[in-house]
Amino acid sequence: MKKRTAVLTAAVAILVLAAVPLAYAQARHRAAGFGMFGHLAKIQSALGLTDQQVTDLKAIAADLRTENAPYRAQLKGGFAAVAQTLITNPNDVPGAQALIDQQATARKAMQVNTLNAASKALNVLTPDQRTKLGQLLQQRMARQQQWMQQHDH
View 1 (spheres, rainbow, N blue to C red):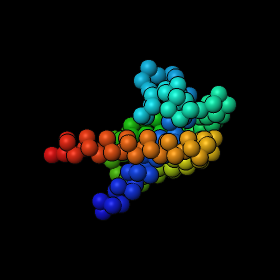
View 2: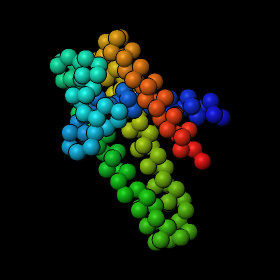
View 3: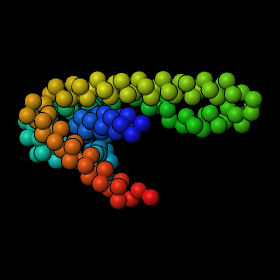
């Protein structure tokens, strides 16, 4: 079970790090950064990205944001809609379940879109840059694991 959890955690971490360049479009609208790199300038420096690569990554991020917009809108307030359904009729478990199923479908679509965008983003990188990204991922996971061991009760 621990091996499965570790593999799943690694897969999610890879997706997150691969999606870091994609998050730039969102990160520029917030004061806080995203992932281990923060802003695109840090990613550009860490991986040695060219201006064209940065432009390509920004375009991929913008496309992903547009593609996922309807799903984000659908998920917004999802729990409140489920709760309101049951408040209105405590016996309407099928109605509440249908809302949960719709949310799960929307989340799955967003995840697939993000996976496809991460693949596109990774294809923008050179093999050396992907290797460096993999090394950065391993370092981050080691730090995260060390922190978890220190704070495990």
